[in-house]
Image (cartoon, rainbow, N blue to C red; front, side, top):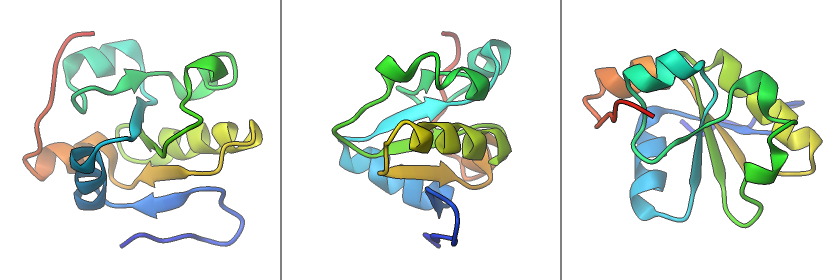
Length: 113
């Protein structure tokens, strides 16, 4: 499903591809949702940086490995990936379907901060 659309600085992937990349290791997962959404359930090991805070928290973004952005459904994470691209990062992925698809696939979730 990996898809690179013209004009988009990120690659779209589905949750199965995201899970494979996470399981293989050496990726950073950014949860682009609100704090309360993250606390209710998120991809294990993900770092919460709200989509509108990516530029302000640029120092937390990995520069040495792929970054997977995920939100509830894939919209806010796409915006977050656009912001990351504006910082010069280019190994960026948007998880299509977001946490809704992740949970529907039966993949593990963590709760709390």
